[in-house]
Length: 419
Image (cartoon, rainbow, N blue to C red):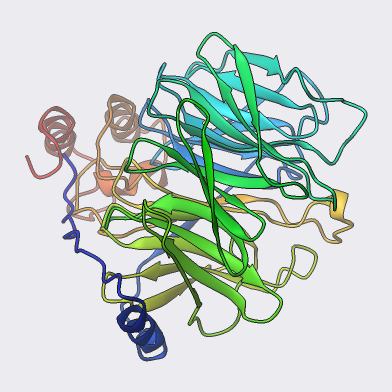
């Protein structure tokens, strides 16, 4: 059990006029409550992490776009990396599939990948993809309501011919072309209505599990998309005239888009519903080579917007709700491939929503005590390890770990912190 409180999930106001008025209250909330952020460096320097998701094993899984790795991080911050079979794959988005594995897109190699929680990787080539063209490939991916994985085919150039793809657990792929010419698909999410919703240039679109597509005009370029706590679709937007914003679509296709009332303009990519019933998204200021500043942003049901600055100068990208009740995100860093000097390693960030209670033996600070952490305490007590290996094991802060403290940690491991 986690010694954490849970936030209430409120219903969101959907009337555009009221929504706009509430959103503009953000300036008064900029100095609101402070939540702690912890950063975990990725060992591969040029990793350039992109998307992140919660896996079926209770860990977080993420893609490393420039390193051609899939990464895994435990709630306590331990990172493992799994190299892809092909160099130059450019893995982007990742999701948990209905089969208990992780599925991801490989943009440059034009494949859908699958990795088991144990690290075994399989890849499936998109049959329609001509590998000579490097500007088209699979981008967003999500678990569908029909037991398949659904993904977008993205083409950034003018005259683009994007598509929506579907892949079964055994790797059978079918693609559905978009109705409009000169458009492309970006991010995709499963909606509350049993359909898939995705972003297009100037539109939010819906595809049924049978492949029927409807498009709804949006007055901007939508980016990330998610199902909100109110049963609507929420998405991030960008426009030359209005800048970055946030939008909402009902399942009937009624779209509202408004400027984003943050302290300064944001370059935002990813949005998710947090474990606290709020919307969370990334906010990058300056591009990777500038690495100016970044923040994770919360938007509450009444419309208040609060920024939580990332401690180091970096560019956030993917955001997800973690298995530990916290918000997790990727930090791009600044890799050598972009000409960065010095190179800034990528990181995984954790924004602690409800700090866990004081728990003897919780070496990783994630609200749990594991067998490995109890063994760490035993080694410290025997003099085979330093106290810094598990300082939470020293309950009375006397500089040593006793048998009573080890027994307390064993009880926490068996019954949960505070049990």
